[in-house]
Image (cartoon, rainbow, N blue to C red):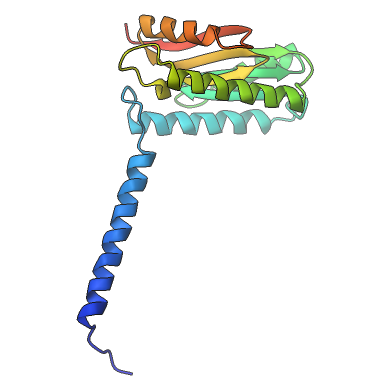
Length: 194
Protein backbone atom coordinates (compact mmCIF):
# COMPACT_ATOMS: atom_id res chain seq x y z
CA UNK A 1 0.00 0.00 0.00
CA UNK A 2 1.51 3.31 -1.09
CA UNK A 3 1.62 6.36 1.14
CA UNK A 4 -1.38 8.50 0.43
CA UNK A 5 -1.26 12.25 0.91
CA UNK A 6 -2.97 13.44 4.05
CA UNK A 7 -6.29 15.17 3.62
CA UNK A 8 -6.65 18.78 4.77
CA UNK A 9 -9.10 17.65 7.48
CA UNK A 10 -6.59 15.09 8.74
CA UNK A 11 -3.82 17.73 8.81
CA UNK A 12 -6.08 20.14 10.75
CA UNK A 13 -7.01 17.40 13.21
CA UNK A 14 -3.34 16.52 13.69
CA UNK A 15 -2.42 20.19 14.28
CA UNK A 16 -5.28 20.57 16.76
CA UNK A 17 -4.19 17.39 18.53
CA UNK A 18 -0.61 18.64 18.80
CA UNK A 19 -1.76 22.06 20.06
CA UNK A 20 -3.93 20.31 22.65
CA UNK A 21 -1.01 18.19 23.78
CA UNK A 22 1.22 21.27 24.06
CA UNK A 23 -1.47 23.08 26.04
CA UNK A 24 -1.79 20.15 28.45
CA UNK A 25 1.99 19.97 28.80
CA UNK A 26 2.11 23.71 29.57
CA UNK A 27 -0.60 23.27 32.23
CA UNK A 28 1.30 20.38 33.79
CA UNK A 29 4.51 22.39 33.87
CA UNK A 30 2.73 25.32 35.51
CA UNK A 31 1.04 23.05 38.05
CA UNK A 32 4.29 21.25 38.86
CA UNK A 33 6.46 24.35 38.95
CA UNK A 34 7.77 25.12 42.40
CA UNK A 35 5.97 28.01 44.05
CA UNK A 36 8.84 28.58 46.46
CA UNK A 37 10.56 31.64 45.03
CA UNK A 38 13.35 31.51 47.60
CA UNK A 39 14.70 28.16 46.37
CA UNK A 40 15.68 27.25 42.84
CA UNK A 41 14.31 24.18 41.10
CA UNK A 42 17.79 22.66 41.42
CA UNK A 43 17.79 23.19 45.18
CA UNK A 44 14.35 21.62 45.50
CA UNK A 45 15.49 18.60 43.49
CA UNK A 46 18.69 18.36 45.58
CA UNK A 47 16.58 18.39 48.76
CA UNK A 48 14.34 15.63 47.43
CA UNK A 49 17.39 13.57 46.51
CA UNK A 50 18.93 14.06 49.96
CA UNK A 51 15.63 13.06 51.57
CA UNK A 52 15.51 9.82 49.56
CA UNK A 53 19.16 9.09 50.31
CA UNK A 54 18.62 9.67 54.04
CA UNK A 55 15.71 7.21 54.11
CA UNK A 56 17.71 4.69 52.08
CA UNK A 57 20.83 4.91 54.26
CA UNK A 58 18.83 4.61 57.48
CA UNK A 59 16.68 1.66 56.54
CA UNK A 60 19.45 -0.21 54.73
CA UNK A 61 21.07 -0.75 58.14
CA UNK A 62 19.95 -3.74 60.22
CA UNK A 63 19.84 -1.57 63.36
CA UNK A 64 16.70 0.13 62.03
CA UNK A 65 13.53 -1.91 61.71
CA UNK A 66 9.78 -1.67 62.30
CA UNK A 67 10.40 -0.52 65.87
CA UNK A 68 11.87 2.69 64.43
CA UNK A 69 9.41 5.20 63.02
CA UNK A 70 11.52 7.95 61.48
CA UNK A 71 10.09 10.84 59.47
CA UNK A 72 12.55 12.74 57.29
CA UNK A 73 12.24 16.19 55.68
CA UNK A 74 14.95 18.20 53.92
CA UNK A 75 14.87 21.92 53.16
CA UNK A 76 17.91 23.82 51.86
CA UNK A 77 20.18 20.91 52.79
CA UNK A 78 18.88 20.92 56.38
CA UNK A 79 17.63 17.49 57.37
CA UNK A 80 15.00 17.10 60.06
CA UNK A 81 14.36 13.69 61.60
CA UNK A 82 11.37 13.26 63.91
CA UNK A 83 9.53 10.26 65.25
CA UNK A 84 10.57 7.39 67.46
CA UNK A 85 13.57 5.09 67.67
CA UNK A 86 14.17 2.21 70.03
CA UNK A 87 17.54 3.27 71.50
CA UNK A 88 19.95 6.11 72.13
CA UNK A 89 22.44 4.21 69.95
CA UNK A 90 19.99 4.30 67.02
CA UNK A 91 19.35 8.00 67.56
CA UNK A 92 23.09 8.71 67.41
CA UNK A 93 23.55 6.38 64.44
CA UNK A 94 20.78 8.18 62.54
CA UNK A 95 22.65 11.49 62.91
CA UNK A 96 25.99 9.93 62.04
CA UNK A 97 24.73 8.23 58.87
CA UNK A 98 22.75 11.16 57.49
CA UNK A 99 25.37 13.80 58.25
CA UNK A 100 27.80 11.92 55.98
CA UNK A 101 25.56 12.19 52.90
CA UNK A 102 27.17 14.13 50.08
CA UNK A 103 25.78 17.66 50.02
CA UNK A 104 24.09 17.47 53.43
CA UNK A 105 24.18 20.67 55.46
CA UNK A 106 22.97 20.45 59.02
CA UNK A 107 21.11 17.57 60.65
CA UNK A 108 18.41 18.27 63.23
CA UNK A 109 17.69 15.07 65.13
CA UNK A 110 14.40 15.33 67.01
CA UNK A 111 13.95 11.56 67.40
CA UNK A 112 12.58 10.37 70.73
CA UNK A 113 13.79 7.12 72.26
CA UNK A 114 10.55 5.30 72.95
CA UNK A 115 8.33 2.53 71.60
CA UNK A 116 7.03 3.12 68.06
CA UNK A 117 3.85 5.11 67.62
CA UNK A 118 0.65 3.25 66.92
CA UNK A 119 -1.23 3.41 63.63
CA UNK A 120 -3.78 5.67 65.35
CA UNK A 121 -1.01 8.02 66.52
CA UNK A 122 0.45 8.17 63.02
CA UNK A 123 -2.98 8.93 61.56
CA UNK A 124 -3.42 11.65 64.17
CA UNK A 125 -0.03 13.15 63.22
CA UNK A 126 -0.98 13.14 59.53
CA UNK A 127 -4.28 14.79 60.37
CA UNK A 128 -2.48 17.45 62.44
CA UNK A 129 -0.09 18.18 59.56
CA UNK A 130 -3.04 18.59 57.18
CA UNK A 131 -4.85 20.78 59.71
CA UNK A 132 -1.81 23.05 60.17
CA UNK A 133 -1.28 23.33 56.40
CA UNK A 134 -4.95 24.28 55.98
CA UNK A 135 -4.72 26.94 58.67
CA UNK A 136 -1.55 28.38 57.10
CA UNK A 137 -3.28 28.48 53.71
CA UNK A 138 -6.35 30.30 55.07
CA UNK A 139 -4.90 32.41 57.89
CA UNK A 140 -1.84 33.67 56.13
CA UNK A 141 0.13 35.37 58.93
CA UNK A 142 2.25 37.60 56.70
CA UNK A 143 0.95 39.84 53.92
CA UNK A 144 2.15 38.52 50.58
CA UNK A 145 3.54 35.42 52.26
CA UNK A 146 3.14 32.13 50.40
CA UNK A 147 2.34 29.48 53.01
CA UNK A 148 3.44 26.72 50.62
CA UNK A 149 7.03 27.73 51.41
CA UNK A 150 6.62 26.15 54.84
CA UNK A 151 7.14 22.42 55.32
CA UNK A 152 5.15 20.97 58.20
CA UNK A 153 5.97 17.70 59.94
CA UNK A 154 4.17 16.38 63.01
CA UNK A 155 5.23 13.76 65.55
CA UNK A 156 3.54 13.23 68.94
CA UNK A 157 1.49 16.43 68.37
CA UNK A 158 4.73 18.41 68.14
CA UNK A 159 4.66 20.45 64.93
CA UNK A 160 8.00 21.08 63.22
CA UNK A 161 8.20 24.00 60.78
CA UNK A 162 10.84 24.29 58.05
CA UNK A 163 11.32 26.87 55.34
CA UNK A 164 13.20 29.99 54.33
CA UNK A 165 11.72 32.99 56.12
CA UNK A 166 12.62 36.21 57.88
CA UNK A 167 12.57 36.12 61.68
CA UNK A 168 9.30 38.11 61.66
CA UNK A 169 7.69 35.66 59.21
CA UNK A 170 8.88 32.66 61.22
CA UNK A 171 7.54 34.10 64.46
CA UNK A 172 4.19 34.97 62.83
CA UNK A 173 3.83 31.48 61.34
CA UNK A 174 4.73 29.84 64.66
CA UNK A 175 2.17 32.01 66.51
CA UNK A 176 -0.59 30.91 64.12
CA UNK A 177 0.40 27.24 64.42
CA UNK A 178 0.57 27.39 68.25
CA UNK A 179 -3.13 28.27 68.28
CA UNK A 180 -4.22 25.27 66.21
CA UNK A 181 -6.21 22.90 68.41
CA UNK A 182 -4.23 19.86 69.54
CA UNK A 183 -0.74 21.29 68.92
CA UNK A 184 1.39 20.41 71.95
CA UNK A 185 4.51 22.33 70.88
CA UNK A 186 5.97 24.15 67.85
CA UNK A 187 9.60 23.67 66.86
CA UNK A 188 11.08 26.10 64.32
CA UNK A 189 13.74 24.62 62.02
CA UNK A 190 13.85 27.63 59.71
CA UNK A 191 16.57 29.05 57.50
CA UNK A 192 16.43 32.78 58.12
CA UNK A 193 16.89 35.45 55.48
CA UNK A 194 17.84 38.19 57.98
